[in-house]
Image 1 (cartoon, rainbow, N blue to C red):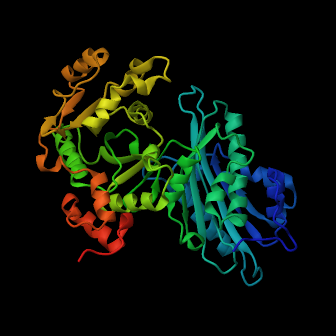
Image 2 (image 1 turned 90 degrees about the vertical axis):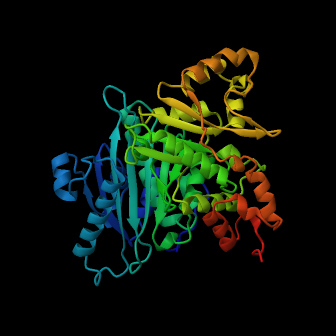
Image 3 (image 1 turned 180 degrees about the vertical axis):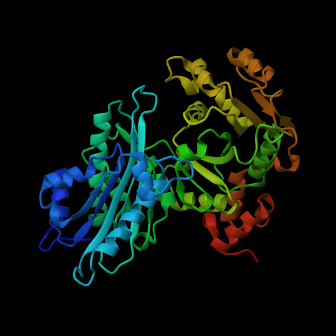
Length: 478
């Protein structure tokens, strides 16, 4: 349900932050707590200033001292404070206290909520720009189960005060959205930026859970963040839940394969397995300090002219079924992807790509918008820890690899330099029978129910396509 005030009409114009706070305060049945640790001391202030807060705010908590915070919420395994785990503990702890201290038999109509945030603003050295988690655990009926919204923000402004003000505005927007916009999660995400300059803060992870959002696919909401320009990259794990890129990439070695995965073919699987085999020869790399990512660009998802969400979900389901971590990015050029990774790790990064993609990497026309052109792009792409694994191509019955690839004359010496310095390495232990497989051909066969398409895909992938009738498969093969 969408909570409404008695006699209240839906406001057509953009409500001010004060109006939103007051509307919450004047609803006699919305009642909850605020717990804000670290630099996040701004949200409750808006509700106090709006007036009528005594009927809404049961308690505000500012466990600013780390020791005091640990005494209340416990010590995190990684000894950190600005984490999703900390946020979850705060939300659960405060809602449990509320349930135990307020007599439901007296307050039969009260709808409880717990709002929390844990934030670190920019440091004095201005090395780290600041980030934080915020969330709300709430109910829209007094006897209903709780639903949750959790999100991670990353600040782009270099001033502490500005970051705190942004946090306060977004916190109010979140609480207001939870009660008045929860039936429209996509709109709710946009409303988080009400009165907030979108260039000042990004939302790079958001998750909706609980009975109110039982039909919500968080992967689609991740896609919404990219589409709306709220962030440049999102990730979700094999379980389909959104995960924070910074946390997953932090100080990790990274293996990334970019593709359309429409559908995942034996070629994609071979590229991954052979690349992983190559990097695991390095004694410094192991499963704990290395993450493998299957990346899809937004431009790839919109290659047909518009974004087909069902098509996206079909790809996502297949990759998740294979136990893969998926990243959706707005990085059409590889150097942007490399630059993004370098923000979170100084370890080794491996980019696995086919010959056709490497040709594009050395095409100067892709870098006309850069002042330094292709040299500027390469300075960002080929950082000291970047290596490209090249999967060969079959063209006119000939195998094309790094030694057979032809680049323009102006790029020839630069290309030789990267080959000589082993920044581009051929995948030699490949399955030659797979080189004639192209996902676009397989897709056409699936959609036309042409026999034999299963032979180009991993067995579990073809089985899932049949079971779920993905990619337009209208009837099962007989």
